[in-house]
Length: 325
Image (cartoon, rainbow, N blue to C red; front, side):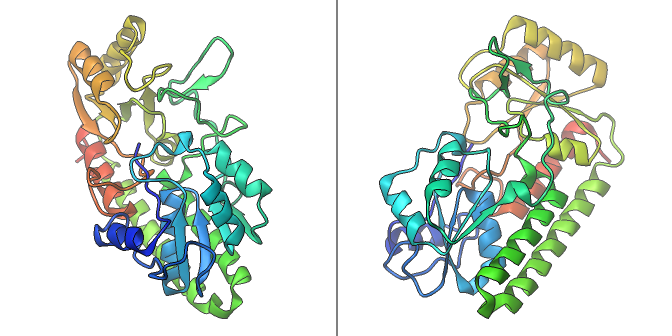
């Protein structure tokens, strides 16, 4: 998984912005780091939160993302510099349960406005639908080398469901209005525009996946439970494996049987994670491989420059895999 981070200096910010990474174009050109600009300074935990902050805040915000390009967000360790940035910022936007070190740092910080996206919509457990398997300690492993379910066993990947992401956007907009009332009217207008685009994306998925040959898809990373539930699909994840390991014979056999019974055609993997596991399983089961992007960050390898473009690429990949007309 691939996520990026905007911070440190104007030069870095300008370079990242020039590359078009994620559409975070309203970053301040001020030479100071987060917290010392004349804008509403927001520290976001990773790309889906930074994207919301930029879309809603527009010209009034200076957004700093804690997670670097290409960095696995779940593995993030907060640096002393980032902790200082947090202290100086006007708001922190994060998704509790996804990045433990971020949760701890924000919890201990004196940031005036703390916005936990997990409280702005409903998180559900998708272990059963995701083919999740417990390890010997009873911990759910989602096939990505580490357990990154929400602390109550809930799935934090709400941004992959456009309807839930829209609910989060509405909550973030209200929080921005309250924290920076001088620009409340713009935040309200920007939020409405973003929610409209997310509703349109939801309709594209609904229509695009309605007439399909199968509803089952196989992934190396169980990130798509919310999306699967929204559109009546079933995600089967290759569980209990890190991205570099080979799938067990038993799991390969199980997924071969699933693919045959349910007409699954494709094993999905992520852009910046090794495709070895997916290709091994696909070769053994006579299936294709393709990318399904959890949109945890935008890099040069992403199939699009921002959330909407990558989600539309995901829709096209799902339509092909599910035999949608």
